[in-house]
Structure formats: C-alpha cells, structure tokens
Length: 212
Image 1 (cartoon, rainbow, N blue to C red):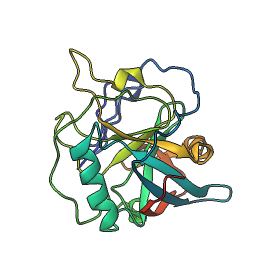
Image 2 (spheres, rainbow, N blue to C red):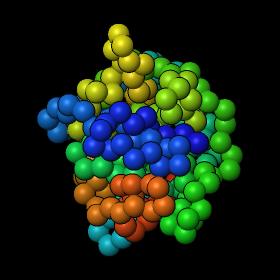
Image 3 (cartoon, helix red, strand yellow):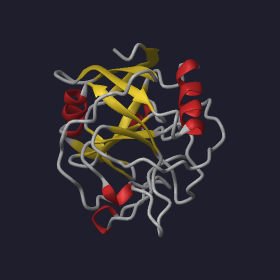
Image 4 (cartoon, rainbow, N blue to C red):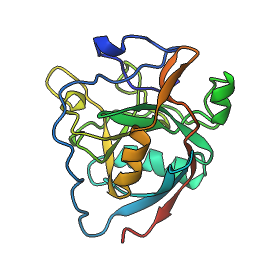
C-alpha cells in the first residue's frame, strides 16, 4: 500500500499502514510557476459534491524525473486512475489520491488492482504550491500509483542531506481553484484513515492533453 510518510506529531495516527506526510514549515500560497515550452501534459477530470469538480491541467517534468513521469504515464495510458478518489485532504498542506476507489467509503480499504512495482525515488525538484509529487511509505523507493498535489510550499517534503524527500514530477498549469476547493472540503475519519473528505471526490479520468 502506497502512502505519504507520517512525520508530524499532530498527525500521528497511522491508518492501516498508510501514513500522512509531515505538515511542516510551509511557504506562501502563491500561484504555480508558468509552463516552459514543450513537455507532456495531462488533464485530470474531478467530480464530487455540489461545487466540487472540474478539470486540472498539469505539465510533467520528464527532464528531471524521467522514471517517475514514465511510471505515471503508464498508469494514465492504462486508465488506472479512472474512478479512484482523493482520500486524504489536509488544508494548507496537500490533497492525496490515485489508489483507492469509492468503495473506500464502505470500509473496503484495498487499493485498485493493477498497480505496478515500486519505483526509485527521484526527489530533486521542490515541493512548491501546485506541484505534483509521489506518495510513498517510509521506504524512499516505494512509490507506485498514489500522488499528491501540494497546496502550499511544503519545504519539509524536499530532499535534504538528512532526508530522501518526495519526488516532484509535475506542476499544475490551470485548475488550482479546483485543488483549493478540494482542500477546503470537510473531512472525517473512516476506519483508521483520517482527513478523508466527508463525501467522495472522484478522479473520473486522467488523460494526456495539449499543454495549452
């Protein structure tokens, strides 16, 4: 099971082996950086409760995180992300999804079948607001399908001399208003999983798309 590592005392509950990342020092919630020329982009279509949903366009950083981008696109091209959910949303931190299905709300905590083997951690870029990063366990090289979108500058998740960090592999070009709406949804606890949106927020699909 893939998840973000827990390193925050305030979020010390470990949910069935799934851990949340540290909600450490965060920078200002500015807009994501503009897109460089070229590159590969994906369109994420999200639906949820009234007022929640829309399209998020993100550009992938294959020039820095080649293995991570290939892994993500393999899932995209095989339509793995269709009907998965954002199962953890922490305001002023991040939203995480890409592994569980709506059955999660009926105590089915198994991840969607079809996951590939774990990949090597390529944490090089900074976990700034609007970036996409891979979720993982305590093992830096354990990421599979789950990812998260940073809603602030999460410097505590960056690679340092003493920390492997979390691998950023893309950034949101448009749709941060949707991300912000998701992070502001009320949450609850289901089983041993905390910070779960009270109503399902479903990733209907992620597909390759033009960057413009």
